[in-house]
Image 1 (cartoon, rainbow, N blue to C red):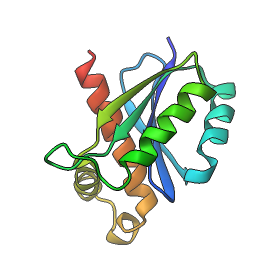
Image 2: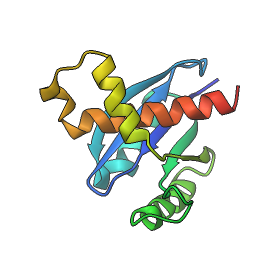
Image 3: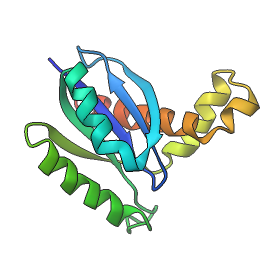
Image 4: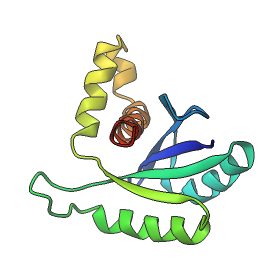
Length: 137
């Protein structure tokens, strides 16, 4: 059984999270520059078996598209063509950043560290991944 990689895509930064090989636990992994995402995934796949990719789909509370929805859909097309053997799944990512900030507070992270947006991005990816795991267990 391979890992599942989660993506919280942003125009500048992308938060990443991954499951353990048994797909039980979702853990924040890293925050990288969005321009390096495909190359990073290619490198990661060489190191770890990846069975699926879950990507957060941004929508407004009324289910309409956000400013970044079009970019995420374009990324999904790139992922499908770059990694045809890996299943790509979309997950609603509404409110994940807010939940990530609350999680960091509850976890006792200092305010200075919470203000680093990369920390919020990778925890948001973990929340997206945990949502996927919960829906598919």
